Image 1 (spheres, rainbow, N blue to C red):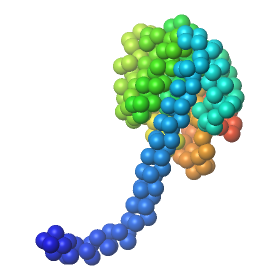
Image 2 (spheres, one colour; image 1 turned 135 degrees about the horizontal axis):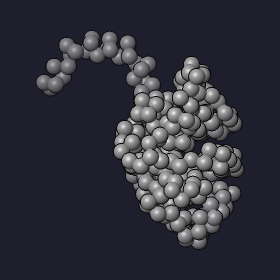
Image 3 (tube, helix red, strand yellow; image 1 turned 90 degrees about the vertical axis):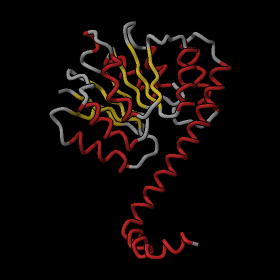
Image 4 (cartoon, helix red, strand yellow; image 1 turned 180 degrees about the horizontal axis):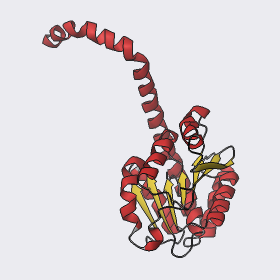
Length: 254
């Protein structure tokens, strides 16, 4: 009863705040719900993919793991596996020949395995995944493919938390002093621009040239508008190299 008595004087202020900010509140609620649904659906998809690949592939054989991924995609609906993504990833790695690769969004580890198999012996992949269950399952698939922890590292945190730590994880040797040669963004599209800016700020994009692959998964043009405006406003550093239905490659050179 006393709570009701205290809240009555606050009603005008509450009504005013709601009237003024109801659109913003509704937008935030919708984004939170969409994020929760993506996380839940993504986790279910990852578990199903992991179970199929783990059971049917030949452990320790990377080609068998990738073939099993492709077999899964033939009989199941999945956004993480497909011929267009496969061709773009392989072509980019063969062309760029990166020594250090950053992947934001591990998912089922399909892209991680494809990237790792084409890296040189001294190459290394750092992959970032927010969901701990997805991160654990992805790491297991990478290990099943025959790769060792010296070749990759899975960070279980948000991209915003991971990026400031990356410089210390690359190591002190001269080969890593220039940062990453290839970056794959396959996480929340709303984080693409903030994370690109953070990578610039932390000087983690190789100044002599870094390819950034942006995976597009059913998002509208508005989701990429910010990052496109940034790229077009800095033509001295950025250019759009490839633009396909599901992926865009931008090139950075300082």
